[in-house]
Image 1 (spheres, helix red, strand yellow):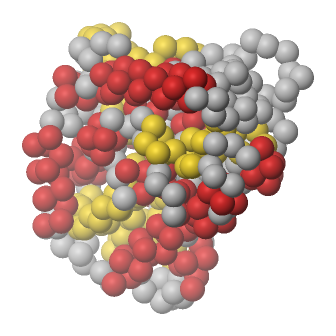
Image 2 (cartoon, rainbow, N blue to C red):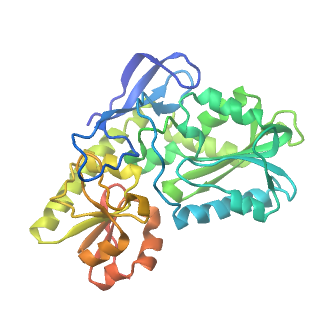
Image 3 (tube, helix red, strand yellow):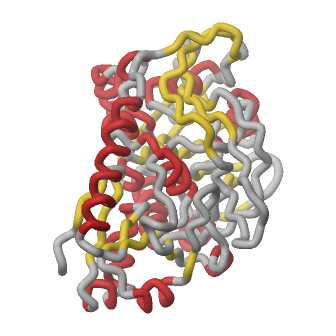
Length: 382
């Protein structure tokens, strides 16, 4: 797969509305990220072009297009995401951005993530209209086709001296770690810190603080306020440092971002080799985590049901369904244990501690967990 950016002149930026950009990753035809067909459903399953573009105007990295309509979310919130919410709320409170009695307007993640419980425990009062002292966006804004309209809407709910807390997958970390399968249909904006801060500045906001976390290989929480508010107009040192680091890496350079194409090639070759060797050794291979990122990896690496017997998931709504295109069955964790697999590919590495603790029978039966990040790495038995 090429790692040379491809100019695209007719396409328009989701932030500025202006034409001009480069295709920095092309994953070909991919199924919708929330499609899990029933085994008896007729095929072939629908697929759509999945390409990532960087705007030459705003620098925003984004989906070129997405004709799909999101379906009802079937997933559940992993413990790692709950712990992330607890940490983020704690740190924002310690920085005095969250105070008991403050009103809060939340944009939760369409995938089920919300800070409501953690915020209410600290005495904040949820509101669903008007302005609020705190506006929280928890992985939500990336799902909006019109990126400027989405951020304008969030700012419209912000009180004059309020704080906007934005948590996002850091695309700088995605490129840094070669996590190309983080790109999926339905995620229209992929944010680096320098570009997101510049977008906020256009709407009269100043970035006060930034925290970075290991979730999803790199998650950032950004605190923003209106310029001229009680919080002042000076950008925070943590923000400046993070911007400097990401710019030094080259996150606004199309050639650097296009290195994800090389990561795809290396990942697919490594997966193919691993599964070929496992088959030669007579090993039974299964998977865990029927997540949206799993589908693109399965398709790109052409992992079919003759290479993987099943994929388990903790969400009951997915049991009895299949992964799109290759139709690998989705089973419950208990059914996975009953299969006694020799290897279990973990498609969401953040779940490792949780699944090892909850499903200890996998290793007790002689099986091994294999991290897909996104190349396979076997985990030594506990």
